[in-house]
Image (cartoon, rainbow, N blue to C red; front, side, top):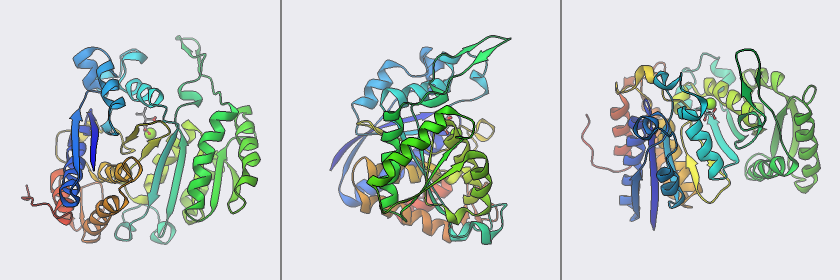
Amino acid sequence: MEARICVLPGDGVGPEVTAEAVACLKAVAERFGHRFHFQEALIGGAAVDATGDPLPEATLELCRASDAVLLGAVGGPAWDKHPRHQRPESGLLRLRKALGLYANLRPVTVHPALEDASPLKPEVVRGTDVMFVRELSGGLYFGEPRSYSDQTAVNTLPYTRPEIERVAKVAFELALGRRNHLVSVDKANVLETSRLWRQVVDDMAPLYPEVKVQHAYVDSFAMALITKPREFDVVLTENLFGDILSDEAAVLAGSLGLLPSASLGGSVGVYEPIHGSAPDIAGQDRANPIGTILSAAMLLRHALNLSSEAQEIETAVHQTLQEGHGTGDLKGARHPQGTRGLGACILQRLGAAVSQP
Ligand code: IPM
Ligand code: MG
């Protein structure tokens, strides 16, 4: 098949990790006889520096004209003092909104070779397989009114029934293809928005009689997630709760650098690791490329419907970890590698001819 993939490397470690993921996509294309056309564009701080806008119109146009978007990361201390509209993060948020991406899938699994990489006990994390479905285009991130002064600041947490329904539908359907269990996270004991959230999920539950639905308050869920993670299958959250809980869940996997995501809902999806731009290690060949490489696998599966190809990448990552290769963030990796070295290990298993850097 032929596909157009827009690559948005962004800031910090973004360019390094996307380069490895693009190499994997090229290897897969070669192997399976596909033609992927890659085009790069600016986002985040890199775009602010070049154009004054964290999401230039040309970038948005290119994304809209592509079959999928692969993104690295945005942000960094250089832009921390900028007003909100010129912060790298606002470019990413506008991109998600403009493309209509309301469902963010964040799978969290614990690789058998990495059971000791987590600060939690191996017997706690072993066998974890959770799929977060995070609402991505509403809630506090976008709610109006919002304002800031040095005396008073305001953010608003709105959700409408249709906004909740469309993301809950994604979660219910994922549960059907998994272990038929859905936990919906809220703060319904305090927030009206959460009361509506809970009501909408309950109203939809009869449409999916196979799925067992449970509700959890976000505070107690935050504890349960790291004390009994195996009890969870699909976890549905609003935007901010999902942002927080998915970073927490990364502790189960052993490193934030491992986790991929897919943002879906519109005609073009965005695939990006859940980690940030990690400015402290940028440009040092130290970042873990696996979160982005697994995001590329999600791209193949969700955007291009190429599940064998996606599986191929996932297997290559699995074997690489199994054999003890890993970047410095993976505690106890027997064969320490840099970003490029780890990418090369994965590429080799994809059948690409690579020279170890
Ligand atoms: C994420 C990130 C973003 C978010 C930031 C960079 C705006 O933390 O994708 O989890 O909060 O959604
Ligand atoms: Mg986050």
